[in-house]
Length: 71
Image (cartoon, rainbow, N blue to C red; front, top):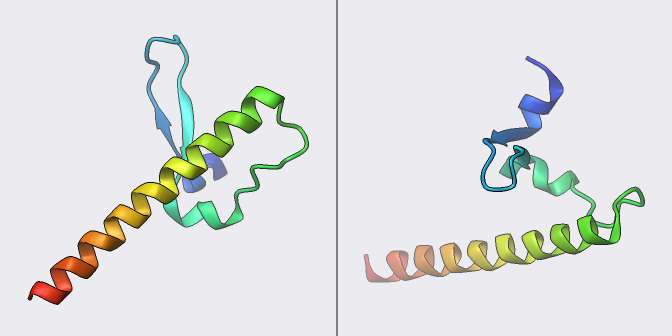
């Protein structure tokens, strides 16, 4: 198994015509969206995805808390 498969999953090509790798949850702690080799567009997309993921995590935590208090 190569390193990329340990830290990411491959998403098949969509409308853009090329596939992308998405970091696995356990690899997110090592992700640096301010990596100096990112273009401005890549930085913006990384920031957007980070915000989206955190928002989803907050929703999931809210559901877990609600389920715990009603049980």
